[in-house]
View 1 (tube, rainbow, N blue to C red):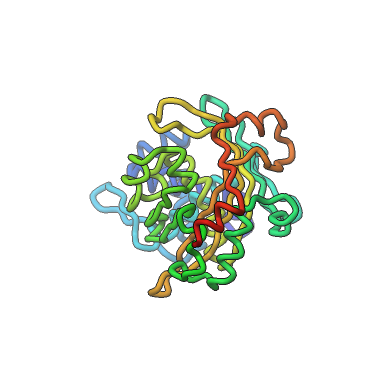
View 2: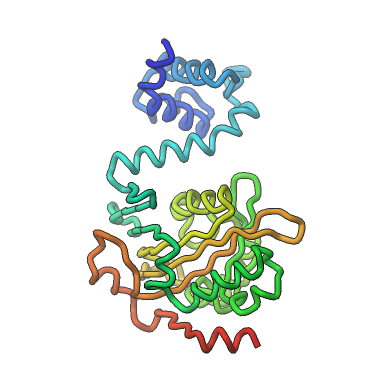
Length: 298
């Protein structure tokens, strides 16, 4: 099969690769895919031929990922997830800015996201996020700079480790800490995103914005509405918030991702019913004033 033919069935190639990588068993992969052994083998062979490297090795009928297979798997899963979301009209772009819309079918939490240009901070932003941007600029991205002190209690900080984002700091006044309570705040440091409340589904949704900020070394503004579990993990509560992702660096020069979240009804997500956007209980709105931020810095 030639180059154009393999491109034409890329979606199926990725499905065969990711399912076999997860099961490491050809019979199980065939059953899950509703395919045949010959087809799955051919798909893997085509991918390996195009990439010029082996993705699997076979020993005594048992499949194992090669180093190249491990390196390629995360991106393959992301490409497949994005493709499926695009086909279902869950993701898109407007003026180059990411949009997501998952309606919470089959009991899953809703998740709506609209990326905004940074000028939205000054047109319709919160004092907390405005202060966060100013602190980031003054600190020149140095996460340990004294310039970050006014907003440090409101931050979550992540470090990239292999293919995961590890939480290394949770501010006591952050949206995470005030939503989930002190027990989750204390126990979440050192965990990967998938191990935090929300699980693997939220980890997948967070991965692309996090990686975008890392790749660009930039600041990104998102407006989000979702259903979040309460501190017991048993009930889902509607939540609306503005989120600022800031590319920073640790003292050793490695990348640090600072996440600043302000729970607010003041979100702008095209296509989201205004009544849904305001469905978060009033007592959960953070209402951080400029005066409070000034007091934090003294």
